[in-house]
Length: 140
Image (cartoon, rainbow, N blue to C red):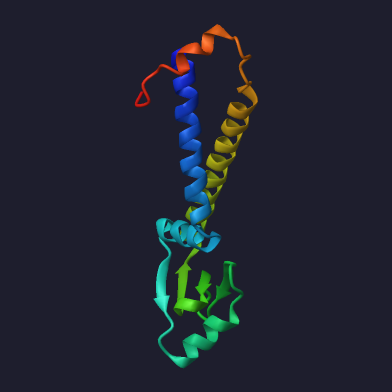
């Protein structure tokens, strides 16, 4: 029984750490991390014309651009930093795969948290199987 309790506390602690880490990052930070991992390249808007083009793009959204040569780019603007993350179809496909994996991982973590919460019941006051919790060392 002690190993079940230890496992529960380890799972609970891990869930808290992941929850805190998830709250510490913004959606934009997560998107940029996935874009970098997928191979998108950061391009600095160093000229007035590039800054105007950057400002014309919707924030927090990947936009599809087709240049005169016919090449299609997928771009994500960071207005505050004057940066545009750009990729082509292969990078965008990689980003979508990473995003799907991230969503699946988050769904699994949420399900595990729900299962852990659902399986926990307050022990009865005289319940003997819980008596050694109070005497167990804290650094298990």
